[in-house]
Length: 64
Image (cartoon, rainbow, N blue to C red; front, side):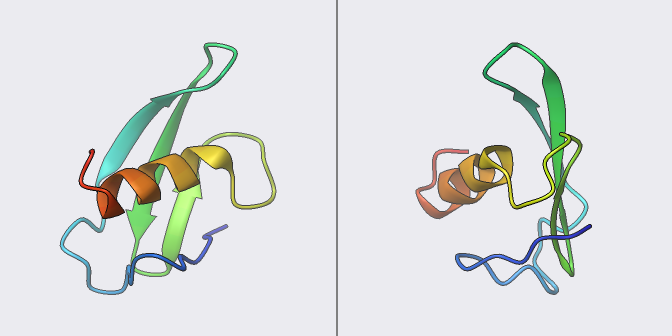
């Protein structure tokens, strides 16, 4: 399930298909991916998770 972004227009974005490895707060490994239709994360959350938000904010703030 893809989650839309309020910060980045993902459709046609040059980073579509890029995968970011994320370590969760309990040490679990997840993967966040940008698609044309939005973001996906391999964590079990049903809503837009903090892992996606961390990647989005890092891109907007130029920290990733």
